Image (cartoon, rainbow, N blue to C red; front, side, top):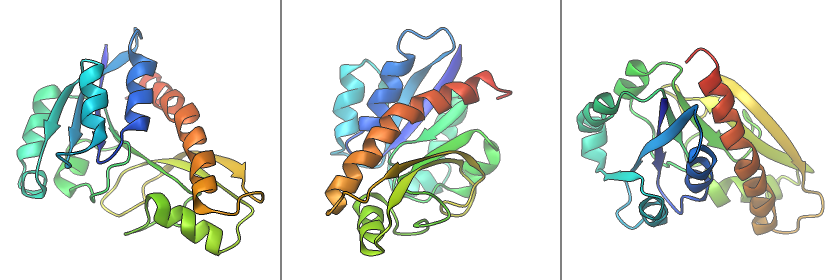
Length: 189
């Protein structure tokens, strides 16, 4: 049984979809949710679904404490699902091509430091894009620059607000992220 660890900073809707997707799977399951936010709603969602949680500080992430906790688990895949901090190089090096992230735009557009959540959707709206989408990619030592695994587009020419764009992008995330994780787990991880 393959083990998935999720890192999230906020509401955890993607984390919940992934946990539920693998709840009765014979392929793998989510064994822990890590968060940097003591008040993140992802903690409630994980607790309700009987998933272990870990809360950590920036110092613990950067000084190797979080890496040690991950090494104890030995996950097959680390999934960043709305995790807002830059992932440290020591973890990236320890788990090469085993860390994936979802970005709420079609990379390389609208990626990089500070480009997350509503910041991305507002930039897409401000630039009068007619479509946007999601990008699932491997994590490397740079923001949003790891190899692209999967992209899916959605038409947004009917959207007059960043909230409308966010709604459409969230629907794509919830539909495709668990499926792409499943494909990765069935590959040569």
